[in-house]
Image 1 (cartoon, helix red, strand yellow):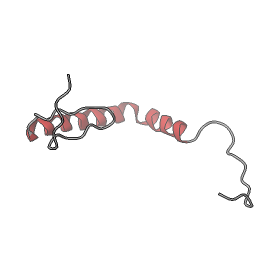
Image 2 (image 1 turned 90 degrees about the horizontal axis):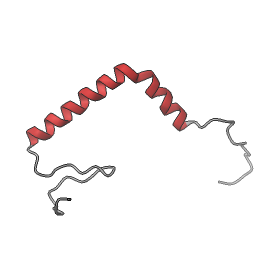
Image 3 (image 1 turned 120 degrees about the vertical axis):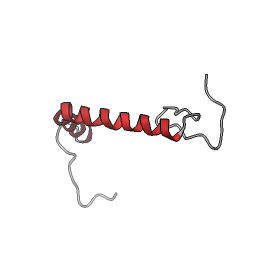
Image 4 (image 1 turned 135 degrees about the vertical axis):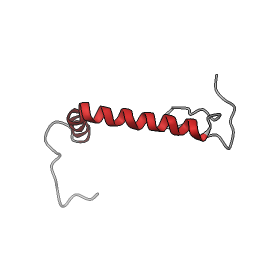
Length: 72
């Protein structure tokens, strides 16, 4: 069940709905928890995360041929 649309409600990012009834203190607690989780994940998996980013940004294979005379 979704909350009714409200101009004061925080926007949903990437399909994740944030409860509009949280107090600022509750939102801060969740934010701090997520930051701690992010830090722990980076310590445990930082190198693997960086490699995964590289693989997503630079696909396998040779880059396309460059033709300086070809228009954009």
